[in-house]
Length: 311
Image (cartoon, rainbow, N blue to C red; front, side, top):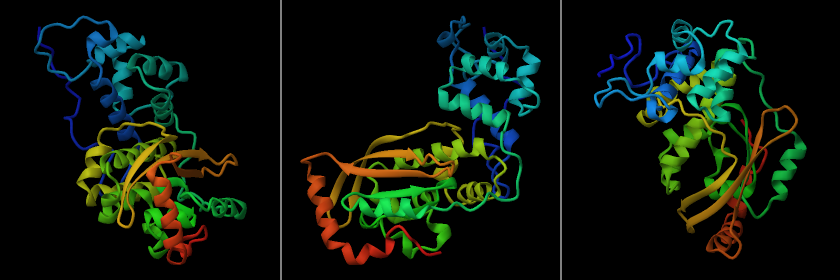
């Protein structure tokens, strides 16, 4: 038999959590996250019968999800409409299990429904300790940098400037991975798989939006990118979240050609919410020689990009 679409479910499209002027809205973010997670599950994925081929609802119906989570349809509907007030951790755990959320998605749901950080006018500026800057500079043969909240590039070494570009020449607000990836054509050209890099940036921003939905600078960044980049709007509307701590990036460098670099990202364990990322080539690969050449060619030209950028 046919299913009727959920009467209150919005059409699939750009997320209501993205507003050209306001950027983020926590209730809309919660609503869209739950709706998109529900839409990706099929009844047969969770052991429910599938009635007919002409199912109009993408994924599970609200009634089916509520049944799996052990809550009333009315209760789940209120939550999916963005009303997470007074929801218990136990209920969120049940819904996360029913939706088959990953650990990162479960944490994101909890942050959206029960934010730990109170609304504030502006988050304090992040500082990179001198010892961390010195550590970056000791990594003389490989690119390394430190990123803060909102994907802001706060410090980097000489090799990062040689590989990714001299960020010190940019105005301080432009030293931001999200702006570089979506608004700077030269950064798009640098990545062989630009789409995956763009996805990685959006995944990270969504995670942060869950932790700090009321951060005005993050809201402004999302609003700006939503206005200026169709690609950003498309990727933001998926509401996907995932923590990525390692991987491989293929770069198309204008001087040395293709670079294949592995990367590892580490949270700085001092409560500063800083992340250090270090790239390295596979031993005996062509990228080893390419980095060596960049180090020798770019020593003078990129030294201004070393770990102490000026605003």
